[in-house]
Image (cartoon, rainbow, N blue to C red; front, side, top):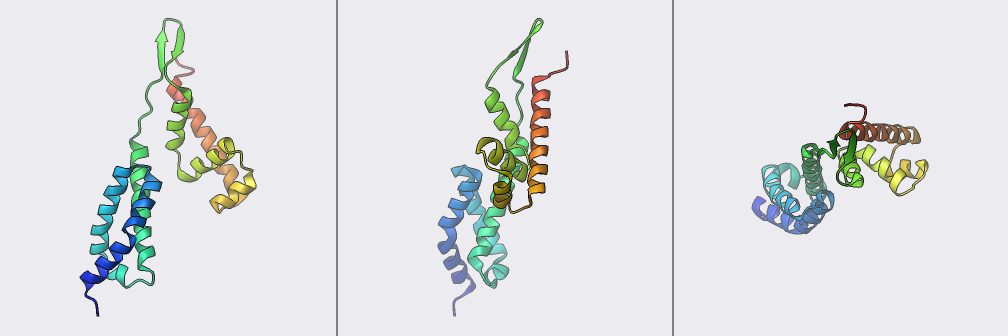
Length: 166
């Protein structure tokens, strides 16, 4: 019978590449994916009894990695500041920078379902029914998420551009 250390080592060796690729896909950053992979080694060791005794230890580790990557992405989104893109020049307002980039920043800060809904509908051109299938929810939820996403983007753009203020 294998020792706990041998079982742990065997499990880690079997999933390390998968964990890295999964983390890199979610975070879109090699450095963050490497950090997450290292963190997983420690987290799996600390939870080794639960992980090794689960019915699907590899899936358990991948779920842990996915959750860490999502947390990392959320922290990064929350820390993104929308930079001031407007310069007042006497009586006229001059927009500095790229509106597309500003819009991307705002969309990247939306909740995941709203972000997916606005991207699939307004960028990819998917129909509501198709989006509902992709997001695994009903069409009413898609419409609600899409509406909330558009409203949030509009409000944040107006705030960033300081429309309606002097």
